[in-house]
Length: 516
Image (tube, rainbow, N blue to C red; front, side):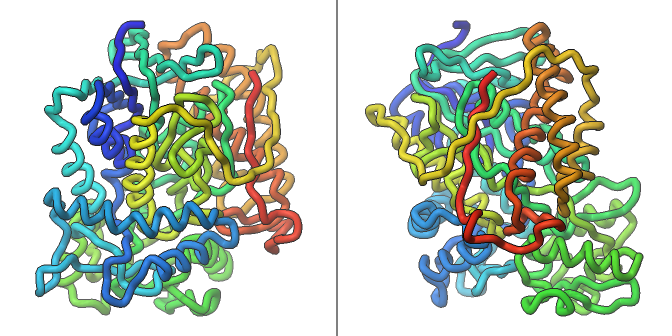
């Protein structure tokens, strides 16, 4: 081994940083970051962090909203942990000096977002994730017990005698290195870049899920991919996220004729849950044959620019005034509810390997995540994983998911598709609206690609482009296979050939374990 530490944390988002803060109080921590240490989905989170801190709120009400958004598949114990412990960890951020917006009385200003019953979202203008990342980095940076290794692309979990003993990574110079650790935490974030259209940064290629799957770790609920409904849709401009907080403050979705249309599809109109709004946008585009827009023109323009300065700058770069113009929007892949299966303390199916944040799945989000629960999840479950990593080893206790064994075909041999070709296939066939035929064809093609890429990467482990193809092909195949298997529609998973929710057969979670 090249490097050794008591603990290895892979990833520098909210879950990894919060865990590192606790772990560094007891032992030596090696923290691997894939690119710039501040480049993660955490920094891209605009809307805020949800917690039951308001006078009209309670953990029970937060739990009801979370469970309703999850469409019958949330794990109740995980939801209870999130909403009960969430206020404690948000208060911790406040005590550490988080620069959240305040009301006239000096209390945290609470915003409202879709599918929340009350205002409960703390925010720092429209750059909440960036502020939380800044604060957590300030607590981690310079600690003598933390060794940060930048531009370190983790490529493989090291397993010996059924236990994780560290990981291999590739440096920016293309050299392979290893880290030995008594306990390893996966906090690598999501997999939005598996899809052609996404709000996620370029680094979100599902590396942690792919590494875990190749090591035989159980993954679960991968069919549930959340597509954010309101993403900037201007040709030649980046697919920039337009926060749900915009609609929480009164923004309206309108069609080409300038008509609000959400009430045609959902009783909650613009404040329906993300999956419902995204599909309503698709239906309205199909009905009218024209784009849809987000409009804030009826709101006070100074308030809009003051409340959403980051979004206002992004739309201005696309030639649009957020406060006055119609902003073209369409859905894009945003968040993965499934992931590496863990218990409520971050344990996985492999001893000494833990996971927290978007890479992990406790079942807390069910089939569809409630807005602004993601940063809260990272804080709560990152801290819980660290607490258990400091204790004597005990086995994971899962929530009762069915287990299926998967095997990639041997031999490979197919020509490898490009990363773009895989993303394009995922967007077209495994996107917002799914069918049996599309899923079957995609699953078969991705299985071949994953098998060929897995074999090829063994011979060229330091090739970054090949590693990316292997990871997105593997994760894409797992998502497509899970979506093909679930013959119902629930939450973010919508099958046009099976449009109804089927509680009789599908009110359950399914884990996959890959054998290579």
